[in-house]
Amino acid sequence: MPQQSRKIALVTGSTDGVGRFVAERGRAVVATIAALGGGARFLPADLSDLAAVRGLADRVAKAAPRLDLLINNAGIGSGGTGAQRQVNAAGVELRFAVNYLAGFALTAHLLPLLRKSAPARVVNVASVGQRAIDFDDVMLERSYSGGRAYMQSKLAQVMFTFDLAQRLAGTGVTVNCLHPATYMATTMVRQAGVNPWSTVEEGGQAILQLAASPVVEGRSGLYFNGLAESRADAQAYDSKARAKLWALSLQLAGLTDEGI
Ligand SMILES: NC(=O)c1ccc[n+]([C@@H]2O[C@H](COP(=O)([O-])OP(=O)(O)OC[C@H]3O[C@@H](n4cnc5c(N)ncnc54)[C@H](OP(=O)(O)O)[C@@H]3O)[C@@H](O)[C@H]2O)c1
Image (cartoon, rainbow, N blue to C red):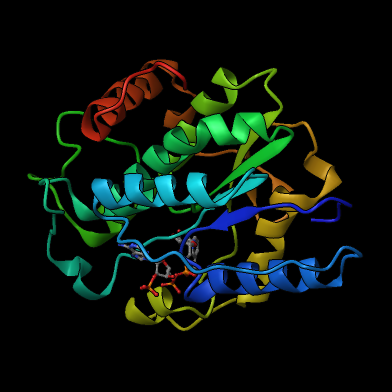
């Protein structure tokens, strides 16, 4: 981030794909700023496991005196093993758990640090692939497909973004989300058997815009398609649906509204 003081960012899913580009790019930016002394640490965690998410947050809070930026980027696509319904150890549908619930819980655990570090930013890497959540079958026990699981998890990220932005109004912590780019040349796209349409650089630039650009400074609760502000699926603007998702997420994550 183009600031004089040392800034600290946490990028999930930075071992591969667009997250790796963002993490490496962030590192390069850090390396070029006057203060130098920037660096990166790899904190392994299986984000399908909420105890591991908690552990990651604890390690971050212990190691980092501040947190200026959190990018919830880790995710699994619709292809590969996604053809069959999978659940985590707690029985939560796997794409809902990794793509959405992990980011929800990680952000909630790190909010005290983010608030303390304000101005700070949260960026949720969602997708233009969104599908309305059926609250009678969120775990997709009746109507599973890999695509449906992926798309409902991505819309959940957008809904979470909008709600959290409202809750954090006036705190100096902004929350935005985006579709980085369509079919970037990454592992998840290869696993889906799709020929890439775009590069990780394109998607990475879109993520970095929300992460560091003055264009969105102080702005919150936005959904971007690449570099342009856009509109998400209609369910994201349905406050009742968002409230249902919020309540379910708290319950699944074993959290309460206190402190959020
Ligand atoms: N590719 C696209 O065209 C596209 C389009 C729209 C949105 N997106 C979104 O962009 C984000 C990044 O996707 P990508 O295309 O860069 O994917 P990718 O190359 O497959 O990378 C996914 C990253 O997420 C991590 N991850 C997956 N499951 C995890 C788990 N259980 N615990 C911890 N980390 C986990 C992976 O870690 P490992 O290396 O350990 O597996 C990897 O670092 C995702 O949220 C995706 O939905 C991508």
